[in-house]
Image 1 (tube, one colour):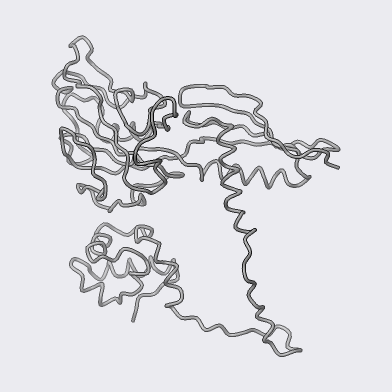
Image 2: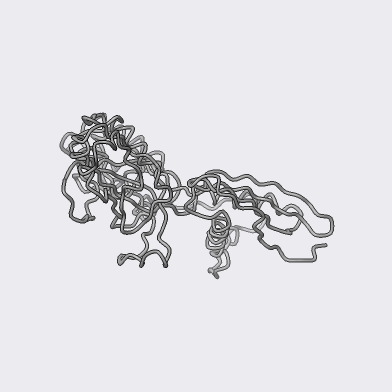
Length: 365
């Protein structure tokens, strides 16, 4: 029989590196059988549902496509983007900086935050080359760098330093998001995708390239369960974070997410009458026919953007130009309506029809 309520304890904390913090925690006691349920739930939430900060886009002066190379820069543009994707940001604490005027960014919210070089690299002495541009050379008004030593690019000459300019877009989100699914990102290179964002003044204007975002502050989670006779089960967690979040705070945040989700079960709702109430007595296994119309299903698709269909660039751009932005908008179109769009052919129509079927939607006849 359990004699105490469950409590969370931090058993060990060790910063292995600036971007790798290790923590060991215990939670318990819980009733026998509950340890596995609680452990699995918290592990999934820790890995998928905690908010983090990531680079979601970048501009580099003189770069028009991601396969370019920059004179005097050791890395290719793709390698620079991969370095940017690995940068780790966190919020300023109140004693470090006043909160930004726009407030805390929420996942998927606009405007985005910005970061750029905070010093003129052209004034570097010749003896400093080759010069490695690191995360510490970047400045953001909203977020701070966790590890200032993370590399971005290597400049081999003063001429390269004089022309190297980089501008980053930061956002808050959850999990891993491909650039195709980032909010407000049209699937086209060479076009600014932050339409509603007016960035601060800067010395160059270039092509904005979206970058796959790694928002996850927790890298790995392990847990084991041990049973104490007379008390119950104890869950022992091992957490590795990217340095932007303390392991103890991460587990507390995961518990809050679980409470928020499951709190909906405590809300009072009107019970729907059972379908069996209208059945004739003595008719076991009888069924009630349900009249289903397509229009009844459309409202739930109004909030799902067409980006979720992962269409080809041609089909996606045609729909965007026609202001067909959600699955509900698309379901109102017929095949002939789509074929009348500019550059939209039969192959694109078949692609859209197949993608809609995964959501149980058919085009109008």
